[in-house]
Length: 301
Ligand code: ADP
Image (cartoon, rainbow, N blue to C red; front, side, top):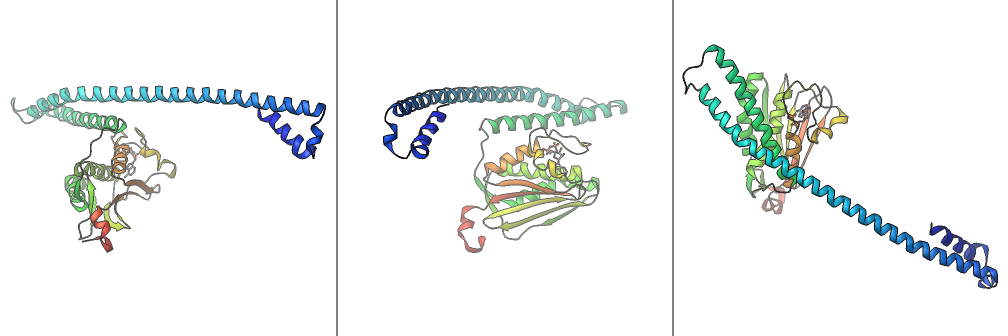
């Protein structure tokens, strides 16, 4: 509102009238009134603006508080559920191992099914705990020298039986020079385990290819599959929590990728995907090289 009389003043002075004499008499009074209105409007506007900013700051504070409470709640529930889950799992493992006597044929199937479901629940609880820790900024990362070839190979070794069971091929394209980054080996393993496991899970025929190479002052790991691919509209969505796309025939919680991306970003890296429906997917992780390597021309030592 205050801007309008101000604009009128400017117009009167600069366009309509050419000299200050023209303000003599009643024109001067109108001009003065307009200036006073403009100033009052400005003062009022400042006050309104200050109030709005204060309300926004307060709303933001309340939101952050609610978010914190929600995170703490999820963390506490997940934490509480973990212990009974471990006990149930132990008991089921004992049953399956015949510690309480051999299982009858009728008992084998339900015990196996229960163990599978308990494992799934354990993974979900672990993921929820990770999400809560990340959101609270409490995910502690160790900082050690990590050779990416070791991480990738150990993950491939872990998933070997699943690859075989599904009749999928695995091709590894790794450099001989150690690709060293600074970070948390276990957490990086978690990232690649998620990417590999997804590639295996979603690929029905063909295989998985892993490439590791240097890209400027970073190392890039690509997990490439011949699976169903991902529609362009979903390429970013799959990194949101609980988002699952496509046929959803496979089990999953939709938490693996968001956690993996957060872990990579906590390592100052990037995780993204390139894909086309029906043409497979390429998940790409780029991590900064360990400083000592960056300093060396050519990037390797
Ligand atoms: P989850 O695998 O437990 O569902 P993720 O967060 O790991 O959760 O993945 C989210 C979704 O992204 C998956 O449900 C799937 O729809 C899609 N996705 C992930 N990896 C692939 C892949 N290699 N090929 C096709 N779709 C994938």
